[in-house]
Image 1 (cartoon, rainbow, N blue to C red):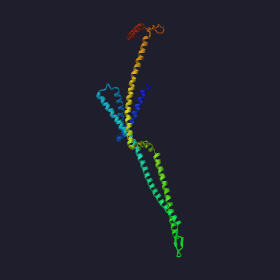
Image 2: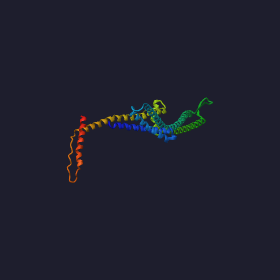
Image 3: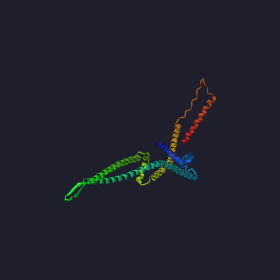
Image 4: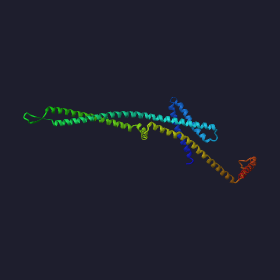
Length: 327
């Protein structure tokens, strides 16, 4: 795992830096949409140069001239700010598309709620009128039941009788009142159905809409913090920018550092292997090669036979001097 971890850090750095470069390049292309292709090429080359410059600064910090070092540091910082600006533009643009859809949805919902409010006012008026009509019906029914005229005749007797004229008037008024009650009840039922339909429509737009699902968490955070949703989104984007490109640069430098710590260990292992090989070479006994007997099919020339002992003696001499120096 220790051998693999530097490569893991390097891959994470490149993935994060690549993501930051992607968002930054396309964010800058939207800011300068008239020359989007040229801006993409420019920003892409700057992103690659930024990573190389950061690695170069880390590896050759002590060998670099002070003026060049300061300029490279300023350049890397400025490029990080440019990358952050591009990421900010990209994320804000993405949020604006959703925000416009959400505003349209809220406009529709507000219109529905206004319509529902008008229906509620009509229902209140109908309820008030129905109460008045109910009171009239009660009074007319009572008057119809007590439709008695009492008077004293010439003989002084008390006479009680019903008035047909009053009875007819009461019945007509009662009939009109009952008809008005039926009309108000029917109208009330229609309005109630309309209100119910509007409520279901509002509920559907708030719960089953893709825009509501996307913007719902942000809206909830805005409600519990007492801030506007645009302000919440702005701070969220700023937090992402703070940990996006700077973290990619830090991971890249960390990967370089990990490889630097790994290189001395590899050199040490190489030296140890060479020393072991030399010790084994010293301990190997020197064996002189036996002259090859002449064969009927192949005869070694006299000159080669004379040079062979000289070469072996010279080689043995070098090996002995080398072993003595090491001792």
